[in-house]
Structures are given as C-alpha cells and as structure tokens.
Length: 396
Image 1 (tube, one colour):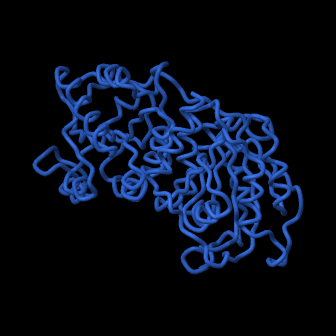
Image 2 (cartoon, rainbow, N blue to C red):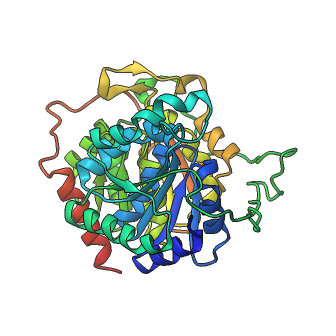
Image 3 (cartoon, one colour):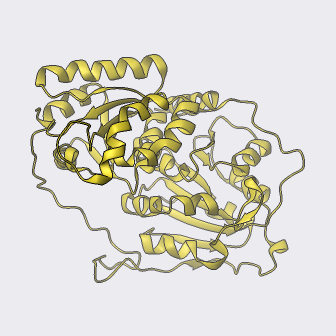
C-alpha cells in the first residue's frame, strides 16, 4: 500500500498536473488527495468517456493528464480511446480499478464479468497496461514505464489498481458553489436559473434557416489565427475543412459527443488562448452531461457553439429529439453564465467577434443539406493533432 502523495508528487515531477475521472471506492483516497492538493487540479467528469476527452484536450495543449475510473466504466471510454486517442495518437495515463478480480476480494455481482475481462479488454483496444504500484519503491518505475510507452508510441498507458493499493485519505475540502446565471447562489432547493438571450426568433420554415456552411464561414471570419476551433465529428468537421483548412482547426473523428470535453481540457491547459467548440445536436445529446461539467468549470476562454439541424445528417438524416426540447435552456439550467439563441449566421459572426472573457453558449438552428461532392480531409488526424500542438507552442 502506498500513500497517494508519493504517487502524485512523483507524477507531478513527470509533468502530470491534471486529473480527471469518475470516482470508485478503490481510488477514493487518490481522488481525495488530488482534490485537496493546492498544486493539482481534479475535474470531475460526468462519465468516463468525457474524462478521456478532457485529458486528451489537455494533452493536445501540452499538459500531461491522468484519467481515473472504475473498470465497470471502461466500456464508456472505449469510443474515445479507440477513435480519438488511437487515431490522433494522443497519449494519456489511465488508472483503472479492478473490481471483481478473479480470485480476489469478494465484490458485488455486477463486477464479476468486467473483473474477468478488464486486462484482456485493454489489450484488445491496444492500451498497454501494468499493475498500479503497491510499494513506495515501485512508484518511480511505474511512472517511468508509463511515460516511456506514451513517448515512444504516442498511445495511452493504463495502470490497473487492485483493492487497498492506496492508503486512506479523508477529503478535507468542500466544493465551491458556483453562482447561478441570475446572480443567486445555486443550492439543491434553488437550482441554477437564468434566461436565454434571444437575439432573433428562429424561422418556423426550416428552408429559411442558414446552412451549416453559412455558419461555419461566419465562424472562420470571426475567429483569430491564434484561436483554436474544434469541430464535432461528421459533416461539421468535413464542411469546416472544405470552407478553408487552417492549422488552428481540429476535425474530430469518431468519439461522438466528445468535442466539448476536448475543448474543456484544452481551455484549462491554455487559458491564454480562446477555444471555440462547434457542436451538433446529435453529438451534444449523446453526452449531455458534458454541459454540466463545462458549466461548473466555467473556462473563461471557451465559446460553445451549437449548430442544431435536428438530425443525424451524416448518417442519413435521421431525426434527433432536439426539435422537441430546448438545448439552450439546458445550458442555462447547467449553469452557463451566458446563453444566446440566434437565427442568422451574421449574428453568430458578431457574437464571436466579441472577445469579452467568459464561458458562452450560442445556439443556432440550421437547415438540412450537404454541399455536392463534399471532400474528406486529405490531412490525416495525426497531422491535424500535430498542427494544433505546434500552433499552441508558437505562442506558449
């Protein structure tokens, strides 16, 4: 059994300062220590896949991050691990607990199957692993082995944690309560409340709505070369590329719903750079919990743009449910301090040219339609990732 501090101190010397994840009783003392530590940051994610994306965004921005999760949540992280980290070649360090270990401590029945397949599952998705250290003398070598693999392969590495690997650490700090959008304190009895600023009413006739290309061109006119633009997977990234391929643009592939969490990690790592996330209604609905995490963390340098065409257009145009709900209202309820609903691409351009600090959410309904012969990016995901890293390094 080791002290959480010994691992965290050694990891910090190796450049790890951001921790994110979803709690597990096995890793409880570890998370508690990180939350209490004044020189470390813990971002509690809504799910394990979001945590992987947050760490990946930080990694793109040059900050090493650690993701902690229970093995029962590993399946939730498979999508970004296989279609984000593996494709873009972005290494992160995972700590996955081994609940339901065969022959190990008695555990609840829901952990039995995952306990038997955890290490095989990691190997199947090409994530190298080793046992989490249980002796102080092993800590340095464990981190060195992880770093060596991450540096050599540009792929994630996992430390699998057995029960009682870390000595208890009681949490002493309490979470900060964020102020609601209307200026009042958010409490369980009084949830976050505020208003959506309606710049103009959305046209009832869908054909009168702007196209996705109109919106993307407006974004490109409004952002500065030093801004980072992250486009969600599907036609959004492809159309942004077709409008104008730029080195400050990240075209997310796979890992649907992870764009905003990638943006959060990047915005945290580089508070000096504005990050504009272009989301879609289908992707946002897939990982809606990310809005709550973003709103709580409130990076002042992030603008979250929703292009809502009420459809999964890149997979055949199947309807989402956004036509029957208010995603801008969801952002308000989650605690975004500034939320606007607009109706035209010109309004989007105007809002993005305003560089006043503060987390913002902008919602724009768009019409269906894809340009004829829409190209796929000829630049590979790995090249896109390296361009983003170099763009950030130039102004570090």
